[in-house]
Amino acid sequence: NAGVTQTPKFQVLKTGQSMTLQCAQDMNHNSMYWYRQDPGMGLRLIYYSASEGTTDKGEVPNGYNVSRLNKREFSLRLESAAPSQTSVYFCASSVGPVTEAFFGQGTRLTVV
Amino acid sequence: KNQVEQSPQSLIILEGKNCTLQCNYTVSPFSNLRWYKQDTGRGPVSLTIMTFSENTKSNGRYTATLDADTKQSSLHITASQLSDSASYICVVSPYYGNNRLAFGKGNQVVVIP
Image 1 (cartoon, rainbow over the protein chains, first blue to last red):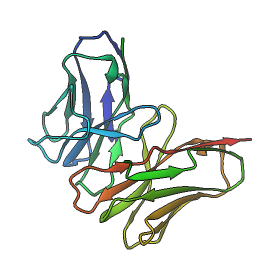
Image 2: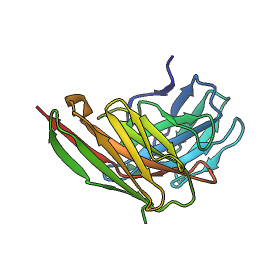
Image 3: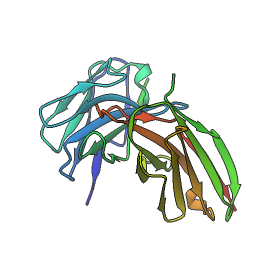
Image 4: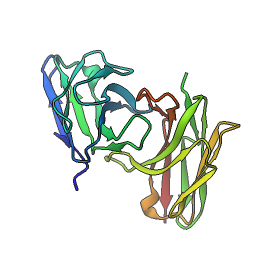
């Protein structure tokens, strides 16, 4: 049972490059989330998807786009990477908005 | 203003000793309060989840308490082990859901032999 799987685990981008972070869960969860974690700060919500076919902005959505491809997969896209987007990104999923969330292993992204 | 404040920010404890981590929150009303453990370079893993009506919940050597009146929670680690070295994150889920969990910055615990 894999849980929440994120790819890639590490990535280095040049300013202005684009990339997509992939996330898949095998727990049949309805809700999926993308967070970023920066030193000295709590996790901050970028986007979430309450159910297949819906997405909503979180606390820090600027510079990102998301796609809920199906119930299993939720991708995060950086169209034009900036150094301020250097961070560790976590995908998470849960049955619903108030139930326990399960996190992936994270993607460490560096933008130079 | 952060809705979840944790203290101490970091602490070092000797293997075998106990420690208590504090979480104060302002989220109201709330649905549940969670404690997560995050090992270095890994994603957070759930330790406990308590609804507003629960006062205590245990998971092995981890015991969480909740006082909804004072809006305080604590996580007690008994007989610490080297593997307890991690960041412990307090998370509050608002009553109305909306998927916007409130995260604390974490308590960094280092257990030394």
